[in-house]
Image (tube, rainbow, N blue to C red; front, side):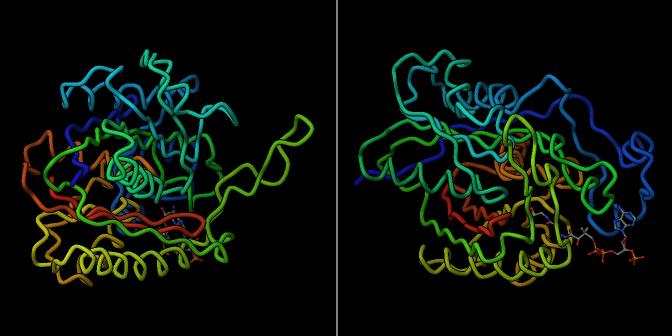
Length: 322
Ligand code: UT7
């Protein structure tokens, strides 16, 4: 039987960390470092320069993941980029990344749009291609420049997000890597978190900024993250006590704490990067994973539970033997 295994990770954050105080001063926000830390746990985020795109961030993360796996760009037989902030309406950010990497073997490349669940979705899709036997070496990337879609006058949202990219190499293996996945969506909640704009007749129409009902998102996220974690554990025949590391989408430290608590896990088993990255949407899980791998915190053989939730609404999880 063919399994899918993570063989390398990489990530990239643009520029220097921007502190809460710097962000407040930069945009004249009616906020404070104390409020942001107390309500979100966020201390820093990275913001991409104006001419830097999602594919630029993806390229750096991808090169590092390829290097960690000991692979060359033309070894790739598929690229999936999870993003809600693509370079263009089309072509896909994955196609642009393929060109930037110099992949010339004609293998498929496509974007996947599930907002902050994008990486969980992309990982699950890649795993299915590998398990079916049609692909053997897939690059899965989460890359975002959320700073492009933030309303800097809306203090309830603009302090939350950051830019960055994370990537993994997922390869065919004789031994299990991805043990189980679960994906969900409920589009009836599409208004709770959205960028409800579009381009029409050469002009942006509707609202081009991220809009969110923060409290409703919070409650929904805590509920479904606990549910999908239990679901994927049951599918993999495991209990929460067998998890070495929980890597939830990095949105708010209070969501991470509530999720760990609901699963009966000590917060020490939860990877926390939101304090340094803010919410990087589809990039948040692979960024947190790569930093932990490179720090030596996550080791080969560890059992990981990755899970995301985001606009749509979408949510999903993966149980992984690293
Ligand atoms: O990937 C998923 C994406 N989104 C999320 O995960 C977000 C989930 N939601 C949250 O993280 C939280 O709801 C927030 C951090 C967005 C807000 O925290 P909260 O504890 O739910 O605050 P709140 O919305 O109830 O607002 C409390 C007060 C309000 O003032 P009043 O009406 O009580 O006078 C807000 O206007 O805090 C005010 N407020 C702020 N004050 C200082 C909102 N944003 C700020 C701010 N600085 N940046």
